[in-house]
Image (cartoon, rainbow, N blue to C red; front, side, top):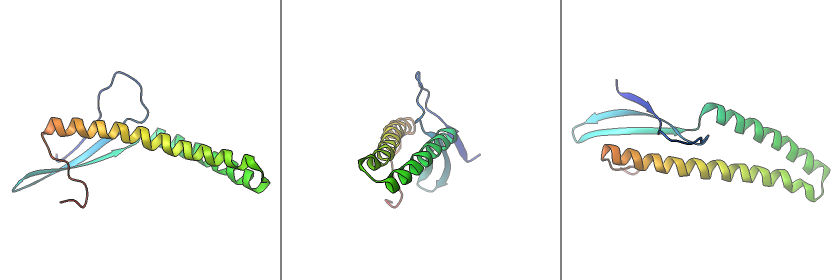
Length: 112
């Protein structure tokens, strides 16, 4: 087996905790571990449905005009900042934990 799927054990609820999967490739210098982090599919589905609803509200507000048209746009911006900030925070913690666990060096795609 050359792949894995793991998650960090936490003592609190967090919908933005990344689902971690990866593959292990061996070579002469050692091994390369390719890791993917994603949101839980149900969380992603909820975010998409919520954003779609707010997007329709934004279109309706823009067609009606007035200052209320900026409220749905602000809601979409808030959603983006919330999701990206929370997911990035948790994914950085997971990367640090994995690096410590495997005594590894992090190499980003394109930085070989």
